[in-house]
Image (cartoon, rainbow, N blue to C red; front, side, top):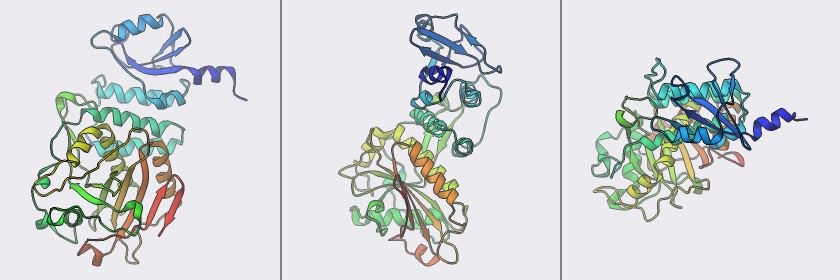
Length: 363
């Protein structure tokens, strides 16, 4: 039976706020139930509730310069009694706002993977969703661009190689746009066939508008961006012979890029439907707001027997299912294991595994 207090806890409207006139040292959790409001400072344990301010008082303070608030859909699923979750969320925002002395200088994708692994280990409902929602909101600060990069206008044939991931990506890019036309890479599965639109796509973040860490320049660089016949996007992550053999790390890297696509959907859609010197325009390119459409396709060097270099396990399937469940724009995750012979002339792939909300299919 759920207690009355827990009912109250879960019913509370929650958002994180920074109110320097009340506490300039940390973000706080603001909860509201009916007409009652409460601020909680998770730098103390247990957090001491402060009910001295009315809702109107707090809204007036939030309207002042230097005050900020953030409400994510996942917050409604996390009780304010979950100190570990809220303490971690506030620590992220304190670091991003320059309120913390610690600066994480790792690449954004490495930070993202670490956050995801913690959330997956906790197995707390809503935690991974909160990670994804926070990163989508932060990726709004990615710099605007009018083309994907110089490969819109340049041939990538000089990079062809069977021994490096970028050699695979360049082969797929040119096979997708030969003679200025759109071609689709056969994958043995209608859902996952794609045409590579861009490779080594850089999402840059200016130090003047970095919502991940104040005052620093950041970027992420997904290996490839592709479109399917239905006009929906796929993030392509390539792990060649010299890259990691694991199956979960590439998934999280590609997920990070997919979140950036959602954040910058209008920019991405517009560029894809414009022609470059070498890149053909797509008639349709879309990331719907309210339905699953995105794909993630991981190409990895095959082992000696043609399968993955590291074992395909129940943990891999569980992580894929958790990512899809928490990422409401993601339709599927696919894996292709590429042999040495196939890597010499990559014009087709074989989808070895595909994971959807319906489960796992092995081809």
